[in-house]
Amino acid sequence: MSSYYQLRVLVATLICAVISSAAFALPIPFSITGATLTPGSGYGVDDKEATGILLDVGFDNTFLPQQFSIANIGDSYSFEFASVNFREKNIRQMELDNLGGLAVTFSFAGPMHAFQDIYSTATGFRGSVADAATDYLLDWDPVSVSFGSGEVFDGVFDMEVNDIAFDDVGVQTLSATITLRELPTQAAPVPEPGVLLLLGAGLIGMALVKRRKAGASNEKHICMLKRGNN
Image 1: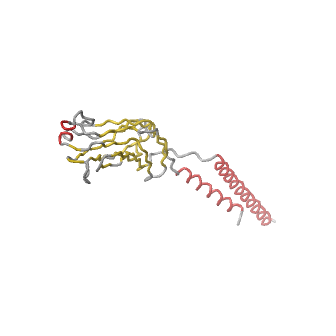
Image 2: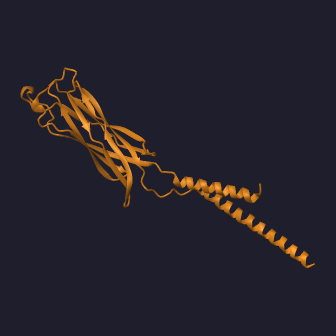
Image 3: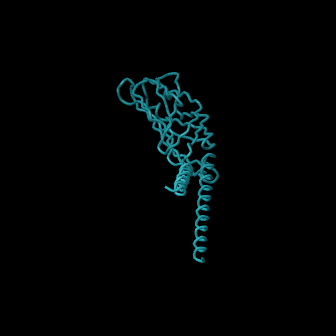
C-alpha cells in the first residue's frame, strides 16, 4: 500500500470522526428551582362533620430543587414534589358541590427560564370510605413544553404527574415525569484540538506526498525528453 493511499485513508477517517462529533447531540440540562401547590376550593376541616361542606384532604409540598440532564429522545426523569393526605371518613354531597382540583406551578431555570403550570381534576364519591369503592381521585392533564434559544424554540418535552385514587384514608405521593420529545437546534460542538491537529497533519502530509510524486514525474519526463533529443 502506497504512502499516499495510506494518508488518504487516514484523512478520510479523521474527517468522519469530526463529522460524527459535530452530529452528536448535547445532553439537555434541566434545572427546576421551585414548585408551588394551589389547591382548589372545597378542602379543609369542618367544625362539625354533620353540617360540613369541606372535604378533609391535605396537600403537603415536599419538593426539592432538581438538576439533571436528558440526552436522548424518549428518555425520562421523575421526581417527587408533594404528598396527598386523604382523611375523610364519610363523604357527603355538600362536600363535593364545590370541589376543585390541585394545581402546581414549577419554576424552571433551564432549559428555559419560565413558570410551567400543570392541573388536575378532582372527583369525589359520596358515601362511606370504609367500603372498597373509590372515594377520591386526582386526574392530571399532561403538558408539552417548547424550549430553545433566540427565536428558535423547536425543542419539546412532555411533563406529566401520576394520577392517584383513594379507596380508604391514607397518604399518597405525587411525582412529576419529564420526557424529552424533540431536540432543539444546536450549534455543532467544536472538535477536540487533538483531532484538528491530526487532521491538519494528514492534509499537509497528503500535499507533500502529492508534490513529491509530481516532482518525480516531472524529472522522469525531462529525462525522457533528453534521451529523445540525443
